[in-house]
Image (cartoon, rainbow, N blue to C red):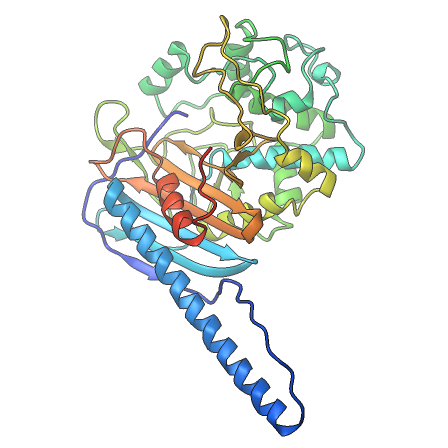
Amino acid sequence: MLGRLSLAGNRFPAVVFVGATLMVFFAATACSGSESTTSEEATASQATSSEATTAEGSAAEVEAAVESAMEENDLKAVLVRVTQNGEEVATVVRGESMTGVPATEDMHFRNGAVAISYLGTVLLQLVDEGVVELDDTIDTWLPELPASDKITLRMLANSTSGYVDYVPMDSFTDAIYKDPFRAWTPDELIEMATDEPLLYEPGTNWSYSHANFMILGEALTAITGTPVEELIRERIVEPLGMEGTESHQTAEIPEPVLHAYSSERGTYEESTFWNPSWTLAEGAVMITDIADLATSARAIGTGELVSAESHEEQIGPSNVGLGVPTDTCPEGVCREQLPSAYFGIGTIVLGGWVLENPAFFGYGGVQAYLPSEDLAIAASATLDEDAEEGLNGGQKVFEEIAAVLAPDDPPQP
């Protein structure tokens, strides 16, 4: 995806650890009489001490992992929150937002592709409610689009429609680098994609396309008569109590702000307020904070907001086997979907983790959830000036943390 972050300056570390433990299991043997009471009290005391030690140890491991990732990848600022069983393990903050301005836990940043999982969730909720079916074709609501009688809601949500991605187009990249503050409309972006021939027969291959999610947003509004911003707020943000998460179609980010920088245009410059209107459906362009991102990771990963049947669809391997390069869809565009690495309904499954990993305009992040451990990791990072161009710093931080907290479940294909 377009856009990466660099940021120069000295690092000012700050760490916040708030309550939380990894689950501790223990067994006690029941006894009778006063000895039983004494034994139970001693066991309870030992358990409390063990839990406290586990919490401190896990928090220290997260802190060390963040510091390692920051050092190895030239990260400028890092915000991290880790939870297990819904309880906080650690919140870690490192670095600067701007020179001389330390990053803080409450700073807002763009969440990018995380909102794709919200679009998929809203769609699945409508399926649960009997309003639509995943295999309904979109010509009912968007008859003017090419192949609308063949392309289904499922194909938009799992990116198998065949619509071309407008982001790699020379005409788009030239325009956005010439004027990164430009406000784009859904109509002009969808037109760019749909003016091109389909890459393949709908449903027969897999390729990532921003157009799919731009169109899915249009379809959800047409189906419900409700703007996407309102759908996400009423169905996801408010039920989850995510008070730091909002839709912002403009370049606005409410204070306090985690600032981003980029050297994409050939010079190192601030990119915080470059216009993100091209990234997703109108109303799904959003900001968040690190606590909300962790809440989101667990909610999407557990299927909290949809039925069990819909969650199976959400993270199911229906795309596995697709992604075969062809004459019209070359390698690198049509990417193979593997049993251990595939795209579901608006989300990614990688090595058992359910995640999104947005990176654009200097922001890099991850929301990730490991069902087998009920472990959620949220990370947002910015890059120092010397960082590798195109690096997702949040992804690197996530990988370091996952390696120490879930060493048997690496987020790899």
